[in-house]
Length: 116
Image (tube, rainbow, N blue to C red; front, side, top):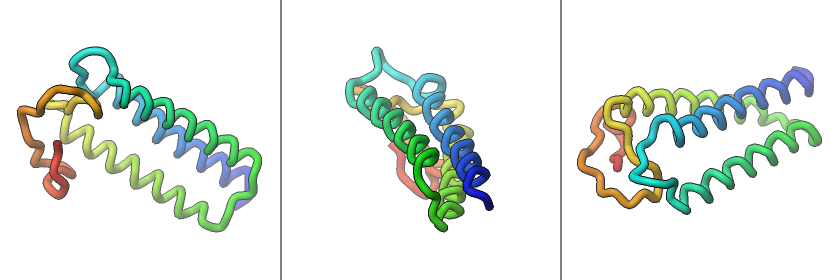
């Protein structure tokens, strides 16, 4: 693959992940009030990380491990969509929220990993 095609592909999948996770914060997860300070920090660091990622794609050579990064993005999107489908009826609260969970998710990916 050419550098520009590889960079564009990585950018599109990276942006899809960032946009999906950003939507999740505002559009899927519940909050008991304002966004908790810890979640604000995580959101800010996520934005900063995406900006650095995009800048490095534009300015630096892409290594041979680019396909690994692409598959990690694909896997991340698949897992995220699986969790959204599993929590559609009972969305969990945002990270760092102060509420106490009243339920335990046991389906979707949560049949393998405990949540909350």
